[in-house]
Length: 430
Image 1 (spheres, rainbow, N blue to C red):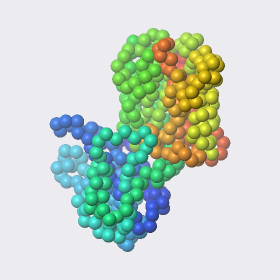
Image 2: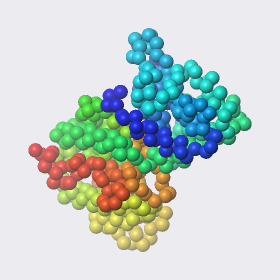
Image 3: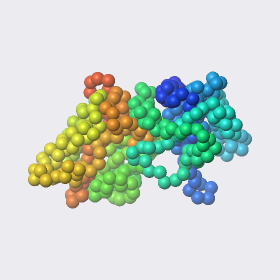
Image 4: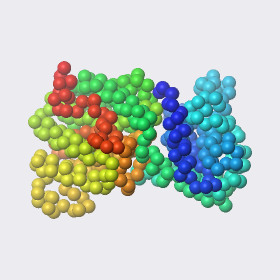
């Protein structure tokens, strides 16, 4: 891995938190992701399942974590199964983790080779009544293929049909939504790398440059700073393309007079950053661009200050809608009549600001996190209002990553990334 080693104490704490919420006489299993093929003998780069990484720090394929707090044998309360290396693997791919290395990364003392899993797991299942399934009930999930975890679930439900099954998502959602300080530090590292990328491209952007050339500048900066790359597929859209919320082709020329929207973020140690900045291609805002930009910035700043302990997710977004409505009135994009006649389920402001303002951020860009209970300290959320005016071929979105504090104002992990109009123009024209 490119990133520096992560202190195993983080994963030890995470396992303690998860195990403390398990039922008595229960067991939980977590599988690594598959390595996906592209055809012939080619594969995509490996991306670890976030839950097993969260609980173990193991970033290697074909690994299984088993948690069994009530095991008769104390050595079996935490078990890690890893792929056994051999000379052929070492020559062609590089040696896999040794048992000692796996313990150092995870803090788990009982490490077995993967080919021992079936025998040991059968023994453990005679001692339990409940097995926790590593499921995904994320509100934005997009599952279109059978995973290694899916195959495991099919196996245990068939082989151990007399046991009870529990979904682990409610536990993982509550745990992963509130970060340990070590996690916040890793997200800050990802944000710092993103900052370097943004500063790099500000000196590169000019009329005639291609969107993919800007993407290339970001990935260069990310890789030389120990990031694996983008935390998500980057959106680099100029002119009308900025009005397409998930525009990812990044294949058009940036034209003089257009605005350029860049929704990009580096990952670091599997933790995501998520930044959006919108800049004038030629380095100078027109009066109209400046007015719309400042309205988006006003909404972002006010929304950020609302992110404090105790706030209810639904109420927060409703208040942001009111702020955006006021800004759109000032810009002449909506009028009082449209507000008076608006559908309560589709407010007038949604014509120009159609997405949510915030989402949880962490091991996933749209991370696990409770959306029904009041916000609490150490939640990490984005703030990303936008105004999109297709008829003017202009879309502006601004986004920072925010940590809710125990008391006082929220912490902006991107506070050093330029965002003010004067700063953007000054840097682009220096």
